[in-house]
Amino acid sequence: MVDQRLRLSGVGEGFSVVVSTQLRGADSPIQVTTALLNVFPEAGGGQETPEPVFGKASNVDWSFESVSLKTFLHLLHEQRILDTALDAIAGGLQGDKTEFTISRLAALAGKIAFPIPGEAPLGGVFTVAIEGNGLDEWLQAATWHPGRSQVPRSINDERAMTEDGDASTWL
Image (cartoon, rainbow, N blue to C red; front, top):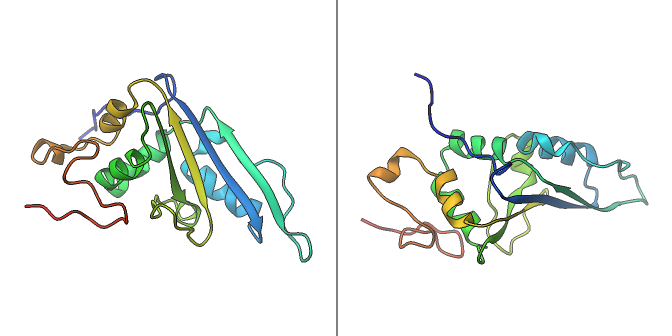
């Protein structure tokens, strides 16, 4: 059976997508680039940054503009974490902008994990900023799955996870 579902990417859909990260201390540019390309292959890879050595730690900021969300959204669908993604991405929604983080360590394994806001997970994070008109409707469409036909979801509904990342209990 062929999946006929519309796949959104954020590119050519009126959205600005910026992915950024900070390399500090012993962060390996090679490993961070691998993690980046696992989730955002169109980002083109990290900038020329030497590997850290004793006495010369990493201390650089990377930023990538006009990034496609195609692989990121595919991974959300593949991992079946679309409701979690809706809650995590919409958690920073303010008007037509949102900002959220994903774990670089999970990305290194080709997975998506949303750290609890305010926490600094081992391995660092990628910060993803999305901006554009109708972002809330786009986000709900991009994370839609057939289960929402039986249990409808929307941004900040009563089924949303709590601020500390706990699941809401509902009947």
